[in-house]
Image (tube, rainbow, N blue to C red):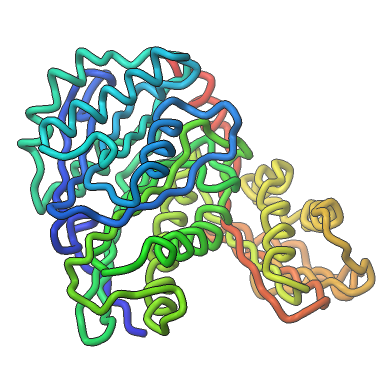
Length: 402
């Protein structure tokens, strides 16, 4: 399969428009975004596993349960609309109702999302006032504006798009996401919105999204914190004109691989933009009995605050890796595993290898760090991504509300 990266983000697929507006939830800049499909789209989503889920998560779940289709996604930043009780649920539902009226569609065909400070009520009056202008802002060139509008502590907007062929028809997938803090594998731990013009069944779209999320967003961590508002939503409007794809078709594998690529690109952007981060870290675990066991090990290592701080300081203390490996929750053999920092082996069959410390220190000097663990227990490989932990992370979160 050949995947070509293209411009346009979420507006790259046929029939999708996007845009943003300033409603006044943040101190400056646009803070509301809208994605609109000109035709009804098959829709699905995955959501946070945090039991303190925000009102928009509850409302979007309900809309997806009531209807297999959706046509719009509306997002606000600057207010999470979480821990806001019945009022929060009414405000999220009212937001969907108001945008549906503006677009001339059913309220159940609108999905909602919010990000920002927990415990603030959504000022529905601001939304009501802003929505007519938000609808007018929709365009084929609105993806980057949308990506900027949903940012909170992000330092740059995150979007990507690809194009490929299925059955002789050109198919596109576009994606945007936001996230820099409260990032930890447990579904997605950020907001992500994906558009595609493929003609596909709901069950196939659901499986492809779950697979892509597990191999991307569920394989990243910044700080071990899982947000209350996480969601990854996808709309597929069928405008590519391909033959209907179901999960047993060979074309399904092509689409899934392309979706994994898009989600993987976005996931790595999140890690590179981790709050206060100065280094990007890739952790590969080889020789696993299963992919899921390997991912469990990789995520445990990636979540180690001790490892993340020593990498920030340039200290090649691989003992942090070995210690995390031993608490990963899967059975390992202490006399079999190998560890590599970059291309230098530091542990062989569970025993230290004498390597010059200065040479090891060089492995942690670059902006991108690679760590490899070989369990020698199977044939599967899993990869996780994280970043270092710096003083700037503390500063950002100590002053988050102020």
